[in-house]
Image 1 (cartoon, rainbow, N blue to C red):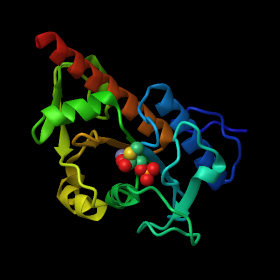
Image 2: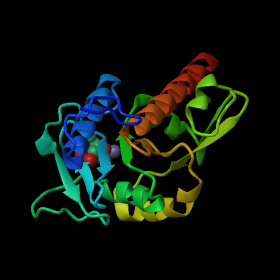
Image 3: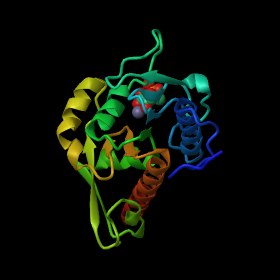
Image 4: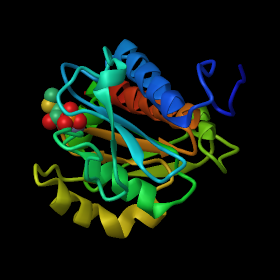
Length: 214
Ligand SMILES: CSC[C@@H](O)[C@@H](O)C(=O)COP(=O)(O)O
Ligand SMILES: [Zn+2]
């Protein structure tokens, strides 16, 4: 048994597929504990060493996943096994992996804070002055601001991916889909979860600030 960099759990196997399934199930439970994947909302994926992507099946509760709830798709989002129905938002995960060979895990949740704030925002939410900004790579002071892009929601995920595409190279935090939820990623699942937790904390703070002001 070994421990991996950034991991939040002990590895249960040296088989990368088993590790990915374990990581996805654990991530879903953790996101559910925070209330970020209500009903069947959210989706979770990991890149496998052979370039395939392990991703949640469409329509299941992400806090109650079993190994059956995780399937494999190609880098283009096609299910490896005929009849499997991957997340409706698979193309958004594929787009994040295609943008950087370093990215190993992608998380999508529907928190109250990301949903509400994005409905009040323009094309971005600015996060400034918070100590927790230091959770993001390259940030070593609270005395800074980071921009979280907001894209209009669209049920046509291929079209939404085309709108997001030009912004992919310049998104240090992830992004939010308006009235929908947040996309965050990292080199591995541990890093992606840490970034999601940091970002959600910051969004929750912003929401509280707005309530106090009104
Ligand atoms: C409960 S509605 C949420 C869905 O429409 C979608 O946005 C979502 O996040 C989950 O879709 P899924 O296809 O299960 O990955
Ligand atoms: Zn969603």
